[in-house]
Length: 143
Image (cartoon, rainbow, N blue to C red; front, side, top):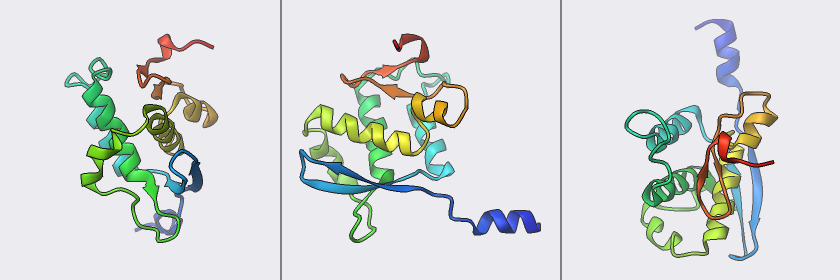
């Protein structure tokens, strides 16, 4: 291994922030996804042709929300993941706006929203969910 790769390997480059969900009277720690988790997320939401043409399917949106929330939300007191696989069923019975806001915050922490990509100085070809839970493309957003 080169000295440069050793240096990169040793760096903890993840980010974490506390996010209050007042409707649930909790604070969660949102951590950025790893590159592996992000690649899995993108593969999961992409259609069979590799694009987002099937992304407005409600099951795909729930799958997308679940993937990002379950991979990035942690209990700030214990450091454990906040959700377990069985939690997916009851989570989607909660207020859609609250779940959507949480999912957007999780995506932003991992550079998966248009705003986060713009903040990084990259092409704004990321994902954005509107208030109704619809996946928006770059051409469908309004300023």
